[in-house]
Length: 276
Ligand code: ATR
Image 1 (cartoon, rainbow, N blue to C red):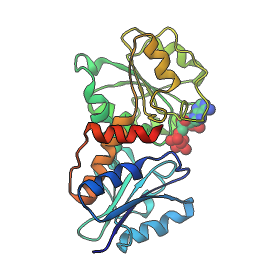
Image 2: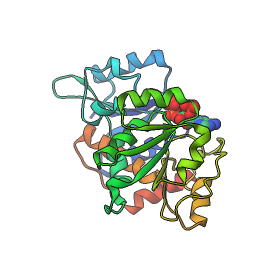
Image 3: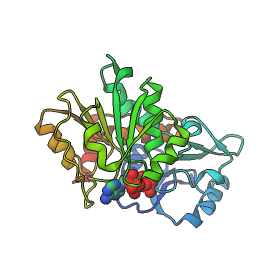
């Protein structure tokens, strides 16, 4: 039996735990396959997609900074990738077409948004920090729930303006004005890389936020960012990005293998152990 090949493309990739996740499931479901890190430059994306078309590679995930850059090389963009123009999963369909999908939206819904109380959710005000690769998935997942008051703040305002071209209902907040708006919102989502292991952190203090605030950090490495620690001390509800990460992987695994893999505590502990 030939061993199937999967992987994740991006740069840098050293932080990715996707190989641990998918190789755990390949073993569990006795699938002869291996998932690896494929660090590539922008000009190598085309040849990677060719490998999928030729069935030399059976599927890839795409991460920063290529979630949009990969699109011109695909035959089709499907599912939530159509609305977000952000592709994180590529596969070959039965007609031999290379298809780009987005499983980040599903990851966010299952890993975070569906855990929130539905009471007044539509009226919630949300502040998204960051306008990078995952931002359009966050906005789309929130808007699917009927949330319309979305503020976005990014160090480089141009990137926020680009996102507003796609989602005109969002409001842009200047990076040096985030504290004031943070005090007024119900949910803050960190979609920046601030707080990642070995990276710099927020200069904002977020001291006067509502006691009912929910803070969500897409980061899961470290398990608790400095912001999560700070908010936890104040008894503010916090979530990290680990469940989102596992759910987006679960949907990618299904797209490639037509098996919906189990997400249980053992798997979660295994992943957490890798973070340490
Ligand atoms: P990309 O922006 O290349 O898609 P990303 O990892 O998806 O990469 O996003 C990184 C996010 O973290 C961006 O919103 C970035 O802000 P800029 O657009 O201004 O670069 C944000 N970020 C990273 N380092 C930061 C810092 N030191 N201060 C503020 N924001 C930072």
